[in-house]
Length: 450
Image (cartoon, rainbow, N blue to C red; front, top):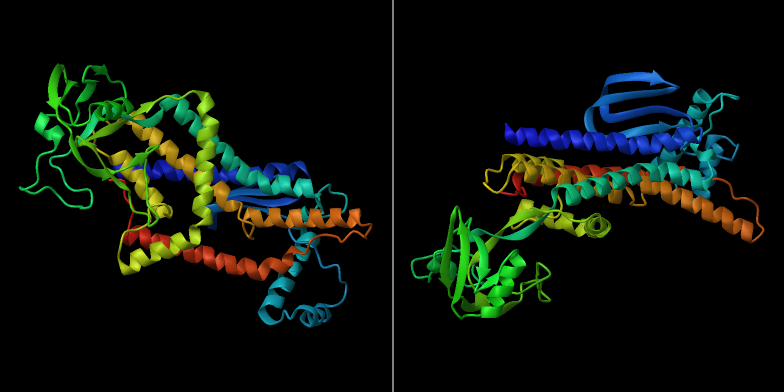
C-alpha cells in the first residue's frame, strides 16, 4: 500500500506540472488574442470537458502529456497557384516528392482550414503565425519556463524548509571486515575484522568526539581520522542513552580517493586508489536546513547536470539498450516513467529508523522538482514538435527579418515551418521508440533505490 501511495503522489505531481506547463502557453496566447480552441491535459479519449470563452478545457484518459491547440501555428502558403503546381515547383527546386511533399501540403491545408473555420473577421482573434517574434517566444517559452519555476520553488522549499541530505556524525554502516578495494565480495573467514568492528562500533552510534576533538558532522569525523592516521584513537560515542568511549586503531589500506564528495577517476573511468587510514564506517544522511542564498547555486547545478544528461542522451540510451538486452550494469542516470514510479514507491515504502515522514516528503518533492527540471530542459531541444522547435522557428523568422531590414531588402515574410513536418514525424517516432525502450528497461533491468 505504501508503495502505490508514493506512485500516486508523484503521478498527481506530474499531472499538475503538465497542466501548469500548458497554462504557461495558454495565458500569453490569450493575452495576445491568439485563438485557442482547446486546452487538454492527457491524450486519447476525453473524460471531461467544458467550453469557456471559445476554448474547450478538458481531461483525457492517458495522463502522458497535454496540449494547447492554437489556430494558425503554420502560415498559409504565399504561393496562390494550385497545389499540383506548387508541388511540381517544389520537386524541381528541392527534390521533395512523394510522402515528404504530401506531409507538407497536408499540414498547410489543415492549418488553412483551421483559419477558415475558426477565425471570423472582427471577432478580435488572430492566428499564432501573425504574432511578432517576441510574442511568439513568450507563448512558446511560457510552458517550459513554468516547469523551471516549479522546479526552483520546490527546491527552495526542500532546502530551506526540510534541509539538504548531508552525511552526519551518526553511523549508518559498520564494515565487518577489510576487503581489498579492488574486490567486490562479501567477507570470508580469512578476512581480518575491520577496525570499527574490532573496536565495537555499531550502526546507529553517534560519534561525539574523536581523540578528544568534538565532532558535529561527518567532515569532522573524516578530519579526525586523517589527523590520527593509524595511531589508536579514543572515540566517544552516544549509543541510545549511554555514552561510551572506545579505542579505534585505523588500518592503512588502499581505498578510492574522494574529492568534494565524489570519487576521483582515472582516464579509464576507474576510481583512483591510494593508501589511507581505514576504519570501515559509513554515515547516515540527515537533513540540514540551508539559507535561501544557497538555492540559486543548487538550482543552477541541477540545471547544468540535467543539460549534461540530455546532451549525452543518445549514447546513454545505447548503453541502456546494451545492458538491457545484452546484460551488464545499467546507466542509472536515465529512467522512464515506470522507473520514476518505482522510485516514488520505494521512497514511501523504505523501512528505516532514520527515514521518517520528513525525509520521505523531501525526497518525493525532490523527485517532482527533478521531473520539472527535466521537462524544461527536454522541451528546449530545438526540434518540432517540442517547444524548442517552435522557439527556433520564431528566432529564425525574427533574425531573417532583421537582416532584411539591415540590408534594405524586402520583408521575407513568415518562416515556412510546415517544411519541417517530415522531420517532425521522424522526431515523433524517435521519441516513441525511446519511451518504449526505457519502459522495457525499467521493467526488465530496473534502477532501484533499495
